[in-house]
Every structure is written in structure tokens, then in C-alpha cells.
Length: 169
Image 1: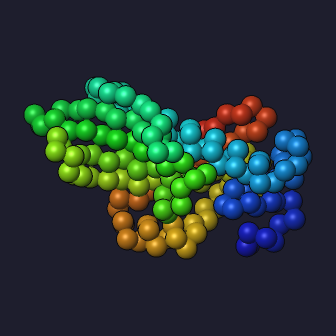
Image 2: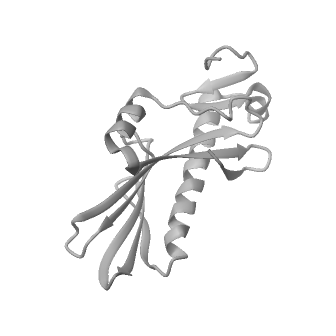
């Protein structure tokens, strides 16, 4: 079944939801899709940040910079001081690079040691297509280039409670 075959399902970009869910939020498809997508990305960013915060990592600061949300952290790994950044570019003003969040590890001289890219896919809890993930051509090309350094996080958003949850993929 393609994205457009089910009349009870609506798509805006890569966000999928039902007509009932849209109507409960006033009926503006683009605004609703942006709110659902942003909610999923914010939730995923929080999860990824908390992974490092729970692993004895010193959080240096969290701040918005150049329309990005950045959490800078410091960690000692095998007696080596390194920095970890969890970065979520703001897609309102930033051309989508094929991912939503990047975790970058650097040494004390700011050389990149590792990068992990995350694409966040958010569907509403009532979506019949919530078990499917659609990647754009740009996202697929980026995933093929970065291979094992690329992951998809599947988030479920409940418009009734404004809560998100991470789903197994």
C-alpha cells in the first residue's frame, strides 16, 4: 500500500496521521504535521542526551546556537578527555541534511573521532501506517553513505496527551 491509498490516512511531508487527529487540532495540516514532527525530534533529542548524562558524563552546557540545539558534554574514556556533542539542527531555517540529530565525539583538539546520525520518524498513535517508515531520496542516499553510522528512531506521538514514546523498529 502506498502513502496515498488509504483515504483515512493523511500525510504531510513524512508525518502520518488520521483525519480525526487533524480535526482535533484545528484542521491545519501543515501546522499539525510540523508540531507532530517537532515533538518527535525533541523527544528523541532528549533521549539521546540522557544516554550520556546517565553514563557519568559531565554536561558542560546546553544551548541553542545558529538555530541548532547543542548539548556539549565531557567524558573520560580510557584516560582520554573527549567531548560529546548531541546536535539537533533547526529544520525551520536549515536545509535538511538527511538526518535530524547527530552525536559527535571529538578529542581535545576538536578533531572528530566518531559521528552517529539519527533520522527521527514520528507517527501518531492512531495511524494505520505507523509500522512503516518512509525515507526520502536524500535520507536514503545519506544512509547509504554513512552505513553503520546511521539509525532511524521511530517515535509515536499521542495528540490527546501531547506525549511521545519510543517504538521498537
